[in-house]
Length: 144
Image (tube, rainbow, N blue to C red; front, side, top):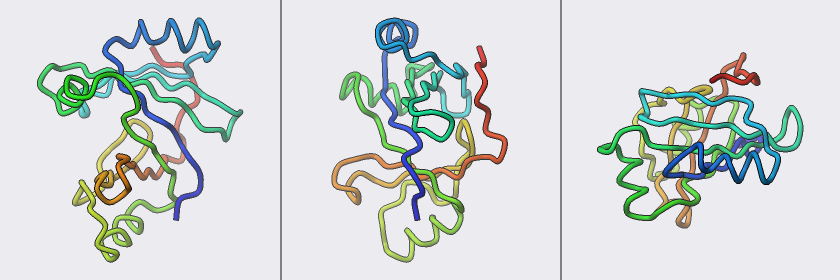
């Protein structure tokens, strides 16, 4: 079962321009900015609520033919998904399959900070939902 909200992901056209608002206006300093080539994105993690708090994740697609680029072109900037942290992603995937929840992944995928699966919005009342098992040493430092 989910332990906490890990992050809320917002898809943006230009990460640096989005940071002008989130960093410069709201004062949310990124703890990490990193490219994730396997997902064809560049991500900024903006912590909220202390060491165990949730984060805002800004996502910029890095290739024009990725599924995230198509999402951005179709829906525009805004909320992309909600991510909940779980202790065991394999058990979560098995449970979702047993409950016949529409899961977009047949096995956990490598995410920026662990292993994750996505649940189809049709199963979650319109919200793309990510479940993530964080790596034990998921970083909290700034990477650029």
